[in-house]
Image 1 (cartoon, helix red, strand yellow):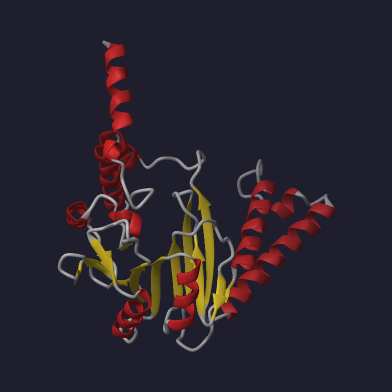
Image 2 (image 1 turned 90 degrees about the vertical axis):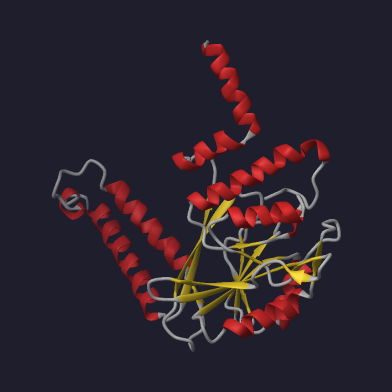
Length: 298
């Protein structure tokens, strides 16, 4: 919710309004879970608890405490049920001494304890870690039972996730520049997860090529009919269709597989109208711009 684990007093009101806008937008987006990271605590204990109560989704953290009482502030995990899977999400953070109203227990011990509590109740375990490189390495090496480690506080986007000791590591960068869509096919508890990103990339490529070739076709006409007199085009169409089928068949043969699709949130992505309205309502700059526009119109 904040860029740093501290807030300059002069910016306090403005930045808290930005944080409120973020949570309001997450509510509209029907967010399912949020791991509380160090920067989310920058506005203090009362504010994070206020945001927790405002949210329509759970805040989780297995190792964040109230420094004055030494009590944990959030649930360590949440379980999300889909149409065919039960997913467990555990949250931890590295912590930071600059957020003085909070204390942090050992994230490795906290993660393992939470995973042990849910591992028999879920099909897949996701550890959401607000961690640096050192803590990420320690979590992978010491915590058992992680299927996917989804890491924030990562400086760069990792387009192809890496696997280590049975755990798939997802890094989607920072500053909200990318959204990550993780597609998982999970059939059994025995087969290893296989990364099929290259297969999905080739399927997308062949689909785009075939779509481009289909522009201007008469309704009901096939590509083969349209290019009946162009032998080279016919060979290309056959090769693309064969390649597409080969990749789809390969994915189907794998019982457990995953594919990460990073989506750049640039100007090509249209604003969701409901979220755009929230931005106008909450953001002071947008409010000021709206006021100026009204003055100009009058």
